[in-house]
Structure formats: structure tokens, C-alpha cells
Image (cartoon, rainbow, N blue to C red; front, side, top):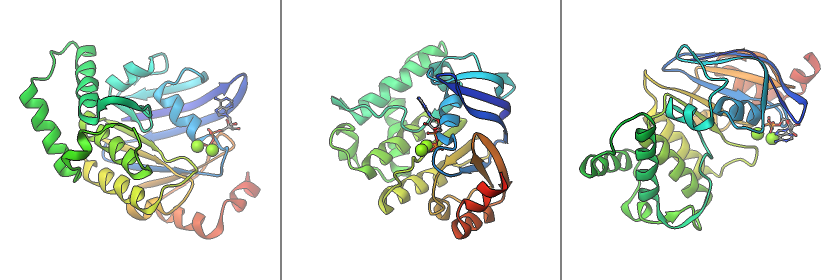
Length: 248
Ligand code: ADP
Ligand code: MG
Ligand code: MG
């Protein structure tokens, strides 16, 4: 699914990613952990193609195709989903209408016709039922006055609707409250399949109690310095990051 080789990336001439190697196969969930400032969010932004970051070496291959030169929208259309992609508040545009537009834009980019209204309604019903999202929520203005949990619900709904091949969830260092955590975890667990892959980026171990990863990687100072199974997350929880820092 995703193959990252020797990835180096800079921001304003400062090298942040210093040779990342990562292989993610369909059906897998990978967690990326690491101390603050290690480059976790930079890695997710670089995979999604955000323009502030310059890839100076290496490659990012999705299903056999090097994505390094593609614009963020093109990557999205190829099935890369990054959480917090649409954090904007849009008064007067409902969660549903925003989603309809996003779906149809994505279809247009692939040369497809708009999704027929009845099919769209069916998809919305199916996904909202799967994620236990009620109708009232779907008619609210996008992100306007949303709680942390509701923002997450909206993101997970977007992810469910877009059916990405590769979803990257960067939970940021601020942490999530327990409600938001459960919403994200339940959503991801329901959407996991043998055909998609998920990268969960988290500073804390607790999200991984709910989303059980197949692999855990520690990113430190722009490099993956340790990889293991889910037990590595517990080891980090117990021992902190100092031993990683002292070894590297
Ligand atoms: P993490 O997500 O692991 O906390 P980040 O990827 O956010 O780490 O940041 C890694 C380093 O890159 C930090 O030193 C940060 O200041 C720097 N950095 C990230 N994005 C930018 C940016 N847009 N402009 C300048 N520096 C940045
Ligand atoms: Mg940070
Ligand atoms: Mg971060």
C-alpha cells in the first residue's frame, strides 16, 4: 500500500525528516509515537503533500506509484486521507452538504459523473448508522460550535464517506478527552478492512488501548529509531522516552 524510502524533508531549509523508511501493507494499522517535536506531524503533512514542506530526498510510493510530485488534492483522490484536512467552520453549510460536495468533487477529478441523489442518501444513511451518528448532527453547520468530540465525529464521518485507502490520523499533542477518543477508536475499528490501512500518530499510549496497532514505530529526531508490535507502546508508557533519547 504505502512504501516510504529514505525520506528527507525540510521546512524553511531546516531538515526535519532525516531518512524515514516505512512499509505499510493493506489491512494493517501502524502507530507512530515519539516525543514532541520529533517530526510526527511533519511526516503526516509530507505524506499528504502539504506545500510548506520540501522533500529533499527519498520516495513516497502509494500502490506502486511515486506520489512525491503530486498535489495534496491528487493524493486525496488517490485515496490518502489526513485528519484535520477540513477544520474550517462553514456557517450555513451542513455536515451533509459539505460531504456531498466533497464526494462529487472527488468523483469529478476521477472523470466520474455526480453521484445520483438516491445513491448519496443511501451512502450517508449507511455510514451514519455504522458510526451511530444522528440526523440532527448531519444537518448542523460544519464545525460551527462543535465540541472536541463532535469535531472528531465529523472527521470520522468524512473518513467513512470517502473510504480512503490510507488514513492518517494525527491526534496532535493536545490529547483527546475520553469521549473523543472513543469516537475515533470506534470509527477506525469499524472502518478497518483488509483493503485499507491506517496510520495513527499519537503522543500517548492510551488511544492504542482502543485502536490496537499491528506495528508501533518510534519517531525521534526525524528518524524511526525503533519499531515493534503493540507491546512497544506499553513499554513506552512505562518507561517514557528518555531511554530512546539516550540511545540515539
Ligand atoms: P511532532 O508532531 O512530532 O511534535 P512536528 O512535526 O510538529 O513534531 O515538528 C518537528 C519540528 O519541525 C519542530 O522542531 C517544529 O518546530 C518544526 N516544524 C514543523 N512544521 C514547521 C513549519 N511549518 N515551519 C517551521 N518549523 C516547523
Ligand atoms: Mg508537536
Ligand atoms: Mg504533532
